[in-house]
Every structure is written in C-alpha cells, then in structure tokens.
Length: 73
Image 1 (cartoon, rainbow, N blue to C red):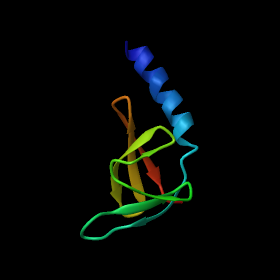
Image 2 (cartoon, helix red, strand yellow):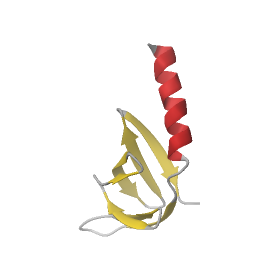
Image 3 (cartoon, rainbow, N blue to C red):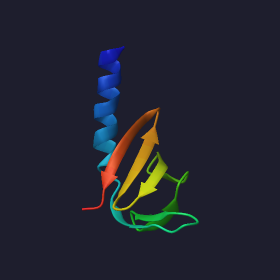
Image 4 (cartoon, rainbow, N blue to C red):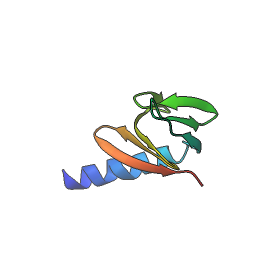
C-alpha cells in the first residue's frame, strides 16, 4: 500500500508540473490566482487538480487526497 501511494505521488508530481502558477491576487474577500492563463479561485479545478488554497506566491492543489504545492517562480 505504501509503495502504491509513493507511485501515485510520483505520478501526480509529474502531472502537476504542467500547472504553471503565474501570479496570485490576495484580497480580503476571495483570493485568486492566474494559473495556465486562467484566473481561478479556491475550489476550482485546473488540469484535474482542485485548488485547495491560494496564498501569496503559492497555491496548494489536491487530487486523490494528496496535496501538492506550486510556487510562483
């Protein structure tokens, strides 16, 4: 089970490399991010990943219970 989970995490890391965080826009009401050329909010889905959290210069995405961080580079 642990080996399968590690393989899943490795696969998701490869897939998440296709998600490009261009900028984040933090406001009191609702944070937004520009991802792959599209403005998204928390809960939206991009490339099969749900945007779990938007913070300054990073987003946390989630798929199949695994959360991954994407930094604005």
